[in-house]
Structure formats: structure tokens, C-alpha cells
Length: 275
Image 1 (cartoon, rainbow, N blue to C red):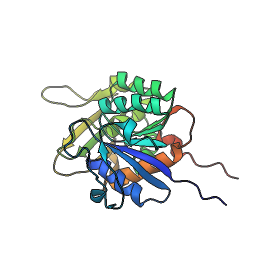
Image 2: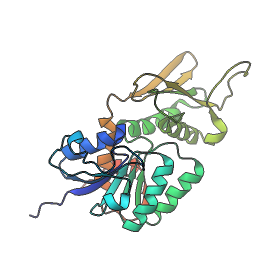
Image 3: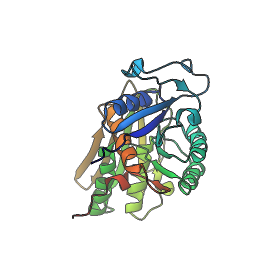
């Protein structure tokens, strides 16, 4: 039996917190090979071998600002950067005819449409949170909202480190969208991101998302279901960035060889049909 070839991946944003986690996790994971590493133009380590920093001194992982250069031998690339950088990498990837696993957050509606457009020409998997546990949380939160009904108010609180640039988090917004859809509501009409002063009583259909920033919190999300005489709380806490890296690698293993389309972790997590 012929042994399967490893998935050859390039990593964009390779020197960021998540990028470094992905590189290290991919180098340790059977069935994966890191063939290129990319960073923004002007990064001080461009042109240097970052293999020793990733614990792989034997590898030549020369940092470049060009995905086309880094991904010559790649099957796909993994990207934890910014929406603007992600869309630029997608344009390069379309020429290379490779897949994209994107974990960047903060896309606006126009940028999401560009993701959808890219998916018509190439396989793209985008998830605002690559944690498998968080993606299970989306499902559970929706089921809880449906079972509890409209008598239970829903609020979301998220907490992240003091270097996170976007707020609310993409994960919290996806939770809000999921919960609003469960109740047959439009997310943009129910979203509240802050309250101060004489703001009046809480609207029946409000689903607030409140953000905390401080210290080195990797990522906490809690959904509150507050009803008459009781309260339920559904919480996910990320204890290490490797959680997101492993989710991205699981997504990459699933995406390799797929037809064009815009996919999510929902697709990855669909249970296999019984034999």
C-alpha cells in the first residue's frame, strides 16, 4: 500500500502569535509538511531562515513577503493575518490554484463577499474561530435558544488579550448571528455592543455582545440565557493558541483536494455516514 503524501502547506503571518503556533503544530503533526512561510513587507526577519525559531533547525524556512514564492510547492496555505492581507493572499492563491484555510477575523460585509467570490474559483475554508470546541458551541447555543424560547434574554460577553485589534470578536459575532437566526431575527437589527447612560430598558429582541480586553487572555466567550427565576451560562475558554492551530490543521487536512467552494468548520465536523 502506497503511503499518502504529506499535505504541503505554506503559512501566512508566520511570525505572528497564531502563525508561529501553526508552524510548530504542522511540523509536529504527521501528514503535514511546511514548505513556505510568509510575512508582511518590511518585516525585520524577511530573508532569514526561521526554522530554528520553529524548533526545526534542519529545515530551510526562509521568510518571504510573497505567497507566490513561498507556495510554489504547496497544496494550500493557512492564513491568520488581517482581512486586507487575507484578500491580497487570495488573489495570489488564485494564480497558484491552491486552497486557502483562513482564520483571520474582522471581515466586513464587502470583504465577506470577496471571500465568497474567491470560493467560486478555488477551495477556501474560512472560520472566525478555528477551535473545534467553539464550533460545537455554536450548535449548542442555537439549540438552547430554540428550546428556551423568547422568554429568555440572550447576552454574550467575550474577553481577549490587550493586543487584539478588533471588537467584538469574530467568534462573538458568529454566536450572535447564530442566536438571532434561531429566533428568526436579523442579526444587524438585534446587535447591541454597548450601553451607557439613560439607554432605556432592554429591548425584547436585543442580543448584546460586550467585549473585555486585558492581559494575556487567549479567548473566553460566555452566552447568558436569563429567564424568569433562572439563568443558564454556556462558556468556552481557550487555554492555548495550539487549540486554534490544531483546528486549522484539521481543516487543512479536510480541504486538501476539494472542489472550489467557500467552506466552514461545519463542513469539516459533519459526521461520516455509517457504513
